[in-house]
Image (cartoon, rainbow, N blue to C red):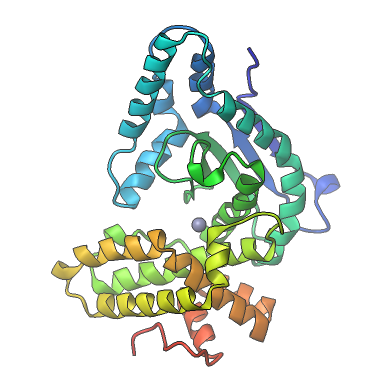
Length: 328
Ligand SMILES: [Zn+2]
């Protein structure tokens, strides 16, 4: 049985290892949450392990679900583990998550090259001296394919169909998630679910459009030619992009005029339009593309210090064909 390294740190610290005067990257890969499950899959009997519940990856996923207004994600994990258990009893020679284990192995092998390639690109799109760091925590059977948490943790769901078991796709998206870690040091933001007023909901929408938009744009600028990413196709689809601009404009308009007791349906709409329909990602990235093209990278990067409203104002100052996203 090949036991994967449960914890591996790639910290380049000290002057000898700094890269061309850039801040030292500190990116760790942590497989603690999935090790027990993968090991259990290779044994012939026994009930599913329980330790995953207490691991950081799954603890953060529960927090993320609350933040996103989603139900308890542990149920999904329990359900899949009991299905695997049934499969193992029916066929003791099967190794149910063999493919996941190989996928994880390829990711661990690719991390050093990733850090080498991604660091200069990230540094170019973050304010000077922003540390590039993150603890990458692997999980399985959770609802999102990946998310970044405010404490520098990045959770990657190895079994998400989104990845198609392509290590290149995970490592590419890791850049997006590491960008969030850097951005979060400058602009904290808050959950739309916690907004107690229309204006608080608007602030959350602007923050997410800025944050997700820049993260998506930075990935887009470094997109490998042989990798298909849905959001990038939407950025290049002028019709869909214009529709998302208009829907987001309407949502911001409605939220800014909403009384506190009318916020619930708008919070739902924020999640549906912003995350599921990709408005935060596509609109924000399209805005970033226009700002960099017309005003330069330094001006775009400066919005990370100035905040989401500066980003929206700057975009409007370029006289785009779309109507203003901010309420008059
Ligand atoms: Zn993101």
